[in-house]
Image 1 (spheres, rainbow, N blue to C red):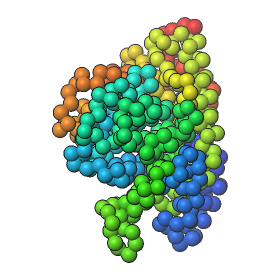
Image 2 (cartoon, rainbow, N blue to C red):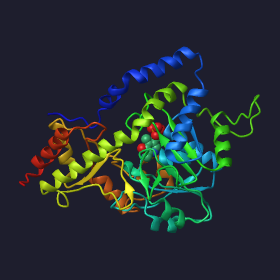
Image 3 (cartoon, rainbow, N blue to C red):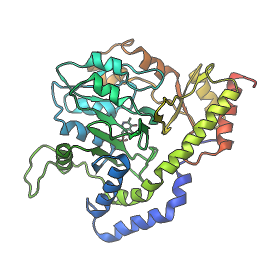
Image 4 (tube, rainbow, N blue to C red):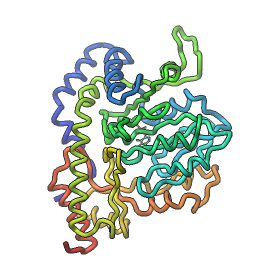
Length: 372
Ligand SMILES: *Cc1c(COP(=O)(O)O)cnc(C)c1O
């Protein structure tokens, strides 16, 4: 039985009619930029994150760019972040003329190591940007303590709905950045994203930058851009948002089953290492990422057997050709580099069945040739 890495239709189909009705409402409204539909979604989103303000934006990448712009990041500034992440966590700083300063990761969680952050902070540091990778929150409290007085931008693109010590992703730092890319915890029907903050000044600044810095009547108070989220997406997302936690719960159940079956197969802690959920954290499993011995051969075996899998991420950002000018060498961040060689994401999505999880485990077992 083939098992896809993602099947977005499975849950989306359950709400198809309500989503279509919302879309038709916008199509018939004649209002296609900003407006009430977006404001309604923003209000619900702010409540769900536990932040005072939420602003819908054009993408997760633009959320990060907007956050950095609002904090005044520019040439000569440094942004401390992780090299084990998606490109835009750090390329957004580069676009503003700033320098990403990388820190190694904690091998257990894949998230930025607070100890490394304290060593990376300099007089030029303008912000610290932890990424909540694969759906598990980074230790924002420890990161903030390691960079006293500096604003923390949470890249929560993969962790909407995740919590740490009772606080939701996106509510712990100065600004939270989210992506509604279709495969994320709350996926749109196209591109969009969101920033959250409880700081009135930052909220007002981000709102201004989202519309070219125009305070009205073509008075440009600041340099901005078009970072708006479509009301069409917002109306459809307003249907999905109330269901997000329920959908995450289906992934958490699947993760529990993965653990049980991988342990029963005698693979966990030997050929493979399972994702961890530290005490006090709720993992949302945006991706279910294991470490695997002979990763590339396992990947080929799974693919040959119709099991969807992918490597997030094969190259750490400090070794990417586009960031060569930063001057980092191989060996600079051993844990991030090791993770890139070992990680493999296996099927995980809202509505994945027990039989599908069992199929994946059985295929992994087939590769390593283990008997229970
Ligand atoms: C998806 C993602 C982004 C970018 O979001 P887009 O909506 O695709 O622009 C940024 N950071 C991380 C960690 C992501 O996973």
